[in-house]
Length: 469
Image (cartoon, rainbow, N blue to C red):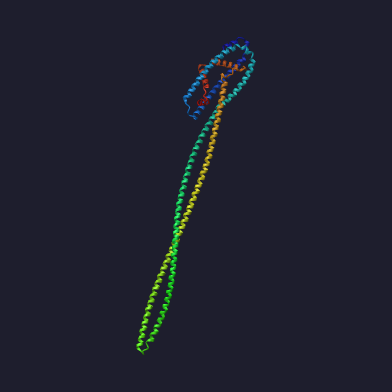
């Protein structure tokens, strides 16, 4: 700065001509101050991005070794310190070049008009940098929005995984219910088989009852036949009894007639006696025959009464047996029909309930499949969104790196033939010299610390490439 003042004080005309350069220097100093604030903001943004990527790496893998990371940070810090040392050497070199350039100020005065044009270009460039700065001011908000979207996508992914786990548990429960239904169906089949056995036993009992009824009918037919024979015998016995009664009446009528005919003849006593004796003997024989016939009649009547009683008893017994058999057969038919109807109803209810439950389970399984497919689709969409957001973050990081490299002093193209880049280097050196005089050691330490923080940058892609290599 002393050399610059001396060269200016050497001639008044030169001092008048170099006023635009002083304005340009002041403008450049303002620009450099703005660039410093921009670099600080970019450093904070890079730190935020680094923290975000560090958190993302820790959340995804959880296997990053902190010691290795600290070593890498230390190496980056050492590299930054070496870069700062090189920058100091380069600054010293630029200062020497600046001293040489002060000797060429006459040449620069001739090209002052060109510099004015270049200053206009620089103004346009400053305007573009201001626009980029406004975009960079919006960058933290975009990063925050992307961070919120990532957190929301992670929460949605976790919820979807929980929903998938719940659906798997419900599917397992449905499978267990299907197994229970199958076991219940097997039990019902066993019950059906047992009922079939019961039905066969009832059919056997019905067959036995029918055979017993058939035997009873045959026995009744035999009894009816015997009753018919006894009725014929009774009819014949009644006929014989009627004949005997008629003969007895005739004999009773004949005996009183024969007795008077024998008594008046007293002419001869001996023949009358013989006739009387013969009539008495005949009368006795008739009485014996009558008594025998009466006894036979009484015996036949008793036999008829006994046969009637036996017939009545057999009829009653056969009627009771027939009624019992008909009642038993009706009860068996009623029981069999009732059991068959109950079994049919029970089986139909079981089949209907099983079919309904199977349909419900199938509908539930289809619903769960649809929900699972929707959850997988949402998970895929969230993964795609996270991938696109990661790509956007990477692009933003690349743009920040390009802006940082464009803003940093070491990235100015020395081989540029436009003359503007060389003037930018000179003015930046002047600004650095002027600001270094005004700054305190504490400020130098803070600026150096900010530069180191801006230079320390953790690139997850490079780390992953190194780990994979």
